[in-house]
Length: 527
Image (cartoon, rainbow, N blue to C red; front, side, top):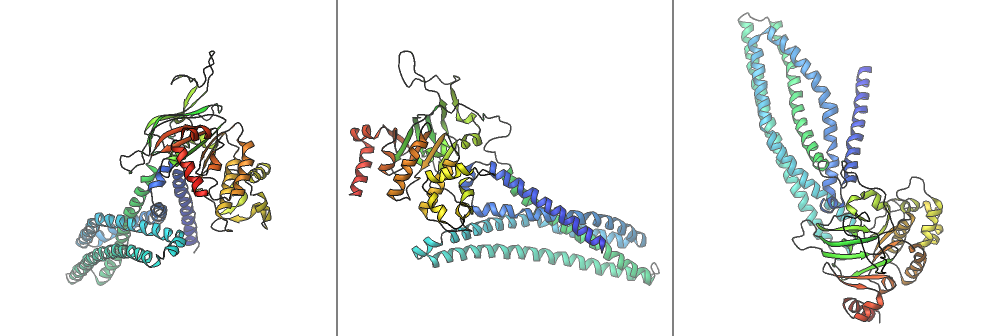
């Protein structure tokens, strides 16, 4: 009893440690991958790979330990059986080899079935998550029936592959049963004949039958080990597919973690195309200077590349051609401004030589698809801090004009929001995201439609609050509203992935180009 308890305790301890190690390593790897990986991978695919660790754990803790004892029993009872009757031993070994060969013949087909089931299960899990997350739009579109049918078709495909897998398993087991039963009948015949011929006593025959049972058990366990080994190998390959991907920041490359923040950002002939998006670049030959300590607004029609440009500035993607670098502005003795040292000089630093993490720590960001965690409001503002700086927390909330709302809640800043907490409006969500970006006290702020869900009064208050905070910081704002961009030091107009105009609000209105049309259309809509 104590031995069984000790064995169970050891296995539980080992399996728990393995679980923690495998999942921790996998999650750590996911954290090191570039954002582009998550753009193309389905949620269900990642979750299925995480679930695969169970098969690896089962193989390492259960099967591996059992097969050691099985091998020992096989050798011992094999010798005993050979001692009693060599012919019976030869038949048992031959049939066991045939049994093993029969199982091995199905391994390739089992792998194929497992891969198909994995793909369909991944699609099923992704589809289920989409159904739950998109329930509001499904109801608004009256698409309940069509979406349920889509899900049922996925279930039908999953059922189809499950049936095929079951049929293969049943056929394999039927063949194995035929081999084993034939072996038992033939060995019984040989043992009975040996008794009749006087080679074995009746007691010896009973001993042989017992020994044969003890000999067969390890064979069954080893066959099970072989199948578990294949399952674990397939699961390990799936995990290694992710582990084998290049990190966003390779460990063998040394990147700078400190640099002069008082520099302009230069984009030189930057071109970018999304993977799998054909040959049409999203950004085409972008040449742009983002001055330090000033506000640059980026405007343009939908699909013009504004958000993609921000993501390149955040190092989520790397340009296929061209460069993004930091350059210190010089004023020469003759008074000619905007003069920059040539490429390769000490004052120019390409962003690719800067650590991704260190760069983003200097960036305060509000994206259109900003995420709210299922946690307290305080933790959603100070996401990266273990110990929250209360003074910075309150200052960030005041600047985002959300302090009064938070204080009106029963638990204040420690009210839980998100999927498992209180629901918040889109406007409140945006203000929390603005507070999050301000809390970091960054040198570079990037806002992508950061106030499009706010009413005019809230937007005006926040813009007024942020004006002082923006002093001495580089700010890049993507927006459509005239009220958000007209006071920017520089306005960049984009169209079809290209920069078509650069200037102040007054200069661009006077030029009566693309910006003038955008402003005119907005004013007409406002009338």
